[in-house]
Length: 321
Image 1 (cartoon, rainbow, N blue to C red):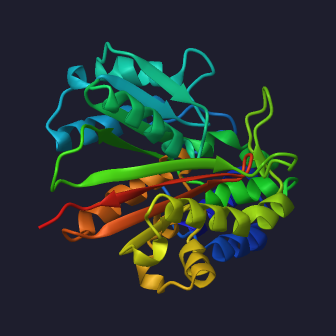
Image 2 (image 1 turned 30 degrees about the horizontal axis):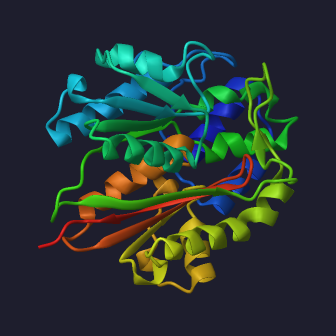
């Protein structure tokens, strides 16, 4: 749904009056479209049939399995990460396993934009023991986590409305094979000790809260920490053919390119077209860019998360000719 159409819907259905402010925030974030799992027919509603968090996640895993030529029973482990599960208990990934007909072990991380990095590190350890393929899926249905009737009173919920998109992305991690595309390294770190959370969700609250000052103050430090971690692993971003930054906004590519002194065309962003999809963002961006990459090209991913100022990433080589 286009940003203008979303704002108009909020005005028509819920009496939202701060439409100019919302449009300005949308332009500032550079987000023009997004997929939504709900119809906004009421202020408190369930997702559409087939578009719940676990349903989106299961579809993403099925697509990844199909590309890998595998079936759910071929998996040794299933790892999920999300901050907007269908319900607190049982874990969202348990519902994903049910939808897939997967009977093996699974685990869930309650992380958003850096969950992918921790999931990769767990998957690397499992695969190194000869466990077999591991599926990782990040999924988010953030549109369920704000009340459209609250928008006039709460400016941070306007940001939720125009920034977030719903979706899921998955990857299959297996044993290394020479001359095949491979994720060669992953890393994770945190800078949040003693610092206020940039985004949080309080117990029993169906909403995300933003501390914009904390987010602005830590952004450049997370950029630099991710760059330094990639270099320490032997994958400096200056040598990469493509860099995928945290998909927080449609303008993040321009900001990252300027910060790192990289050509803007080497920094891949699609949040302008799908919004910030949180846990799913890196996997969706990676899938899109990987489909375009030429043999021999390298991709470095630099994720970041404002919840407790965490960073993570990975380096990927798109095979060799």
